[in-house]
Image (tube, rainbow, N blue to C red; front, side):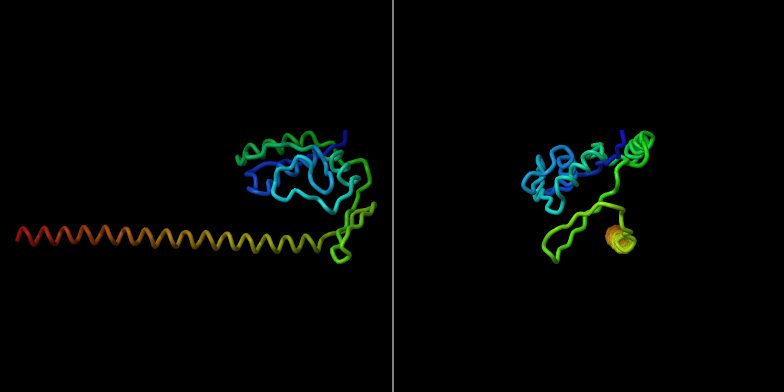
Length: 171
């Protein structure tokens, strides 16, 4: 059969339970806009119709190794899934467009439109996040250095003080 994989791994997002919600969406779909069986804080899907959700359920196989953060185990599972990949899905692509200004959604079938602009925006945001994480790392290293310097200075001061007291007491 032509199936694809969605590998759910890593630490679950507390409160929203995004991984559990995606697994529940695949298993139970949506009823009255709510993902059936989802335990997260806001498990609602408002911009997909039943046909799009059914297509997701048919086209995707969910592989659940949630809470696994071992990169080697995740890579091994990805290689296992890659070996089982049957190729392109046989059905035509579907496109779901969300139009917030109109207050609703429209769905259309056909070819997938290029989304290079969106990818560029996502890439730019990822670079900003990466820089922020790097900056946080530098600040942590600086703070650790300052703390280590304080402790080192305190220890040197105590040793010198004890040495001076010892010399004064002996002399």
